[in-house]
Length: 330
Image (cartoon, rainbow, N blue to C red; front, side, top):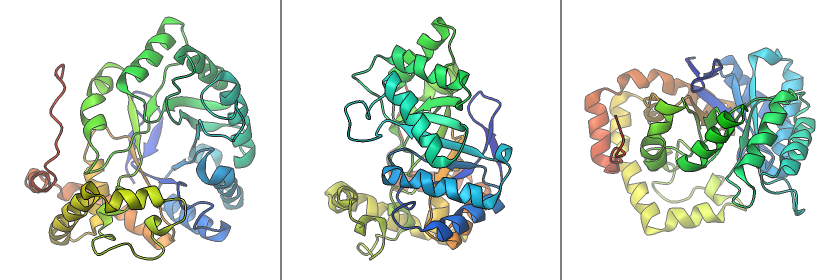
């Protein structure tokens, strides 16, 4: 396993990590969750990602049970959760000081942990002043309930505002962002955030590297039973797949298949390796419903050296979506 620093922090995270979105509480019971997490841990994964909203908290409960059952040393793990959607009450949603503190306490109880290593603001909250959120996150860290804080799907301007407030008020600034990033979704990570890597040392924990499965090739011939897009509650993903843009993306996935075959890897491994090729990626979050999938995903590390300039150029020729550099790019 390769380990990368999380942005400009001293924390090292495994280049490939394991997340609970979709599968935990939806597709996996405790035994299978244990097998998947153990396979990841045995491969060198140290970062395990979660959120209060995943399966309405059941994903955190399941992960907490696995960690307790496995008996892993706490210092060998980097555990995260994300706060925003915590329930149906008026103060159970958003990034107010009240919800951040109460939501974190509830998440820790579900995870059976004293602290999480990383805590994310799961989305920006336009109804709460960013300074209130920054102060609440600083409080959590000072209380020892989290070690680092960051954002997920915030704009570069919002991240910089939070960073500026923290520096002005001598508080702890955000360390990392969790954005969607894959061959089909590139603009924010490659263009919008480009100045932030240089100016504040922003780390990134990537979600959806396989574009909800499109880049694995599994949807090249329709929607197979048991796949994510066949699950109840994910109709929005299915509608996106069936749209003209979605079908264009499926065609791109079909055209990537010969490149994967030439490299002796799966399409999923190719897509993961492509994300890892970006030096501004701290870790790529993978998911799996079987331990065999975990092992397959981990092998993507062996594909990265095969992504030569010539191979990357061929991939760009298929994707045709490389963002233009930002105007202040240096």
